[in-house]
Every structure is written in structure tokens, then in C-alpha cells.
Image (cartoon, rainbow, N blue to C red; front, top):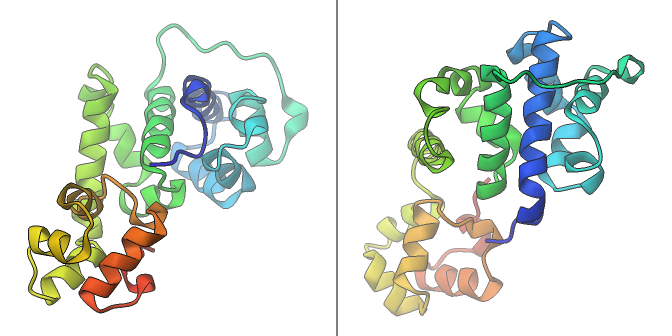
Length: 209
């Protein structure tokens, strides 16, 4: 899967999003839910998830928070406390999950609200980030339902192996698309075309909105 930005920037992106949420809640005294909604409605979220370097690496979390609330004149030096807050962890973990899946922040929030992620602080902040991502993916896939690829495959009466044989696309790749381990929207054109021909549907019908 092609990521929006190189992994070398991931750690900085995580700390930036983490500091942004922490600062908004504890310094600006805005509720997490209210601030995060403003973040989603701002251009900052789109620029962050698309990997704009001036956002993920060029600004601090404080600067991003103040840009979201529209008062950048309040910028001040900010040092995260040694005992980081649940909101800090939410930003840190969420940035990793967004980078890993290429989902937008709005897509994630539509099925897993930010307050629910905060409720996952215990026990997930003590676990490896992969376990958090596994849980998030499980929740997201369950609530989103079956992929279009799986729906059309089942409608055609084909197993994954049979579809692989007919289309020439590897069965493991089909499994990854259906489990959303890979984003079919970012798949090679020839693979999606081959699947659409095998299932007798248009390419657009296999895309995930």
C-alpha cells in the first residue's frame, strides 16, 4: 500500500497530533469531542492525512491546535508532561492508525468516534501499537460491513480461490482487499479491471466510498 508520507515522518506526525489534542483539552479548555469536530471540519485534517510536510513536520501540535480554533496569536512554548494524558495517547495512536490504513480522519470518526478511542486508553496505552491497530481495524470492518468486492463475489457465486483463478489476481490479494488490509481504491488498475471483468461489473462498483 502506498502511504501518504514516508515512515521517517511518522514519529513526528504522531507526536504532533498527540500534542495538538493534549493542548486543546488542557490548555485551551475545549472538550475533546468539540475540538476534534473542528479539526475534521478544518483544512488541517486534510493536509495532515495527505502528508503535507509543513503540517506533519513543520508545525508543533500547539500551532496546529491554534490554527484549528482560528487564533494563532496565542502560540506559546509547550512541553508535554512526563505523565502524558489519555488525549495525548489518542493523538499518538490515531496518527499511526491513519497512516497505516490510509483512511481519512473523517472516515475513521464516522465509525469510531474520538471519544470511543479515548475510552480505549485502558488497557491499550500499555500495549504495542499493533494491538491497538488490530482492534481499530476489527471495529471499523465490523461496522462498515462487507466490501463491495465481497458482495459482488458472493453474488457471482464464486469462492475467493475461484475468483483468483478466473481473474488472475492472487487469492491472498483478494483476501486482503476483502478484509480491508489493502485499499482496493489504491490497487493497480489492471488488477481491478481483471476483477471487474470476472465479476461482470464496472470498476466503479468495486470501489470503496
